[in-house]
Image (cartoon, rainbow, N blue to C red; front, side):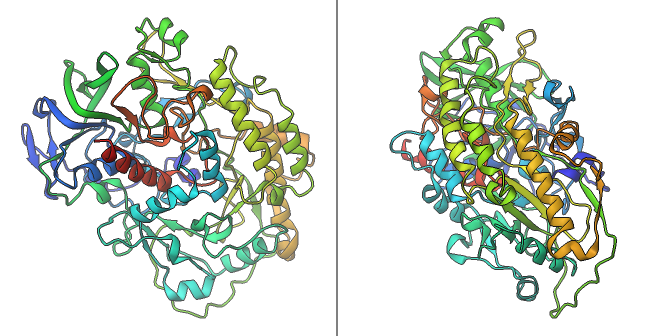
Length: 603
């Protein structure tokens, strides 16, 4: 949930505990941590770059049989504090990156929020634990190969395998109509990544729920995790017993007792090593700097450094767009134009608010509900037909009529252009479907609502090394609102919020719009205001190493292997060819679970 993140609310009393052996120690939780790069062995079966959500999941699964040795190299620290019951960002756990100024967003630059800690994004996110809809995953399959299994049916077994589900408290469920479908959830006792309903609530949420439920076009599914959208209570990544954050470290590292699974924190991977077209290992240094060292992978190198830094490693290794590599004076190993292209994130506005003219009276509660958990987790996830009943066909047709090249960067490679054209055809149809979630709106008891989001922006950005300083920070360009259709959609979202707050069941409370305010009473005025308010990133970057056919600008195939080389895969959110109508964390766990099976099959 981005608003608290953007405010960077401090979290008090963090305890930083680090292990102090010279080279190798066993943590109190028995996992083998290498303290100092000199402890890294010359070779392992698998070398994983990135110890975040995907990297630790894959490392756990590959090492669980004891047959294979696995090394995980993580740029960030091993932070033993795993409480974090609420949102918050500590600057030592995130990269200090800023985007380039965004010309279509009044030349504002934006913080790039990505984890730099063991556990990665799952350690620092808002704990909102969601899945996309069936139609959204099915779009992935259509962009892949003929035998792709990356649709809803291919993903569901890995959602069930990777997440342990805890049903809601019975009193909470009855009081607030919290329903679920057990057939789409897993409860494997060996799974330590938890999806849990929060017991944080306010009685007034019953009024807000009823009002949203009766908005035209809004449906209430039995379970929003079953591939359907609408209005529903959703899970959080939270341990059901302790109410502490559940993340990839607690799920896939802590408590493991395996000599075959090693982690080297505070280690920066600089590039890949090759023998011909075979990727043989990686070069690395201490995160603080120092001499370059090498480690070999007998079977495969697995990139799990995220949608910003996996492209960086590829580009520094000579895999990427030819012009970029030429400008950076990096010898080309494989010309792969899609590396760093197709960059996407969710767009949001954090400042929409209302004031009650007549304060609602809290309805009575009929059940005793134990308290515990994060903020209330009730949301509406709505398709464009419900957001804009009068204009959704106009928007879809306007988008369908666009020249695919018109709003991409100049001189976009023909394969990347072909990939966007294929996406455009699919998304123009998706705009007509109630089952594709364009709008996310979190509901609580206050008329000051958080962060209406456009979950499927049609603008496409880039991430790239800086040719003048290739080893420096990545150049992140969201290209926010570069496609004007995104502004059209956000205007319709703001108008939906107005209808919800001031008409229908909530009209009796005479809510007055504080921000943006009644003066913004035309589409043109709302668009002008929104341009100065939209953040192009909800800290959910995807798409930069896309799993698409190579002729569509794809970077990895359906087995997650990088085109043009051998023994190299990518398993993080960068492989997602498009955004989802959901936060990406649960999907990244499922991707990693599926990736581990694919890797073991070809071992």
